[in-house]
Amino acid sequence: MAEFRIQERSFGASTVFRVTPETTVALLVNQLTRRDRWVLLLLDGRRTLADLARLTRRGELDLAYTLAQFLRWGYIEWVDSAEGHSGGPM
Image 1 (cartoon, one colour):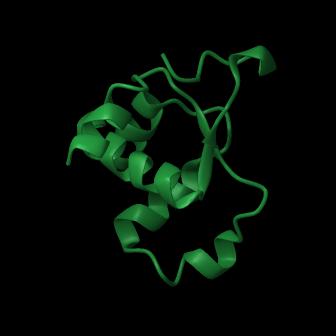
Image 2 (cartoon, one colour):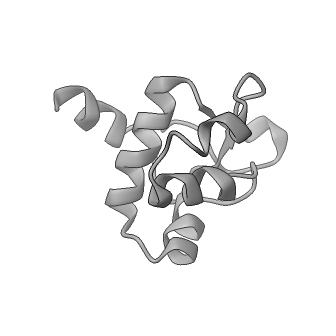
């Protein structure tokens, strides 16, 4: 749980994520729960955590937990703010 608390503080509502190039979404969709699959499919490198919360009707903390798991598993990555987005770790 301590690991999650550290990751939880690492990004905020304006952080942007994308699926890593190494991740094969088609293979993962059958392994994830429906709720998590929906989040993974919405990650496009432009949507913020707040956008995802609104689209999925989930709380930001709930989504932060899911995204922290995806980060730990290597499925997603932060979109660098140098790419023109306001994401990235704080």
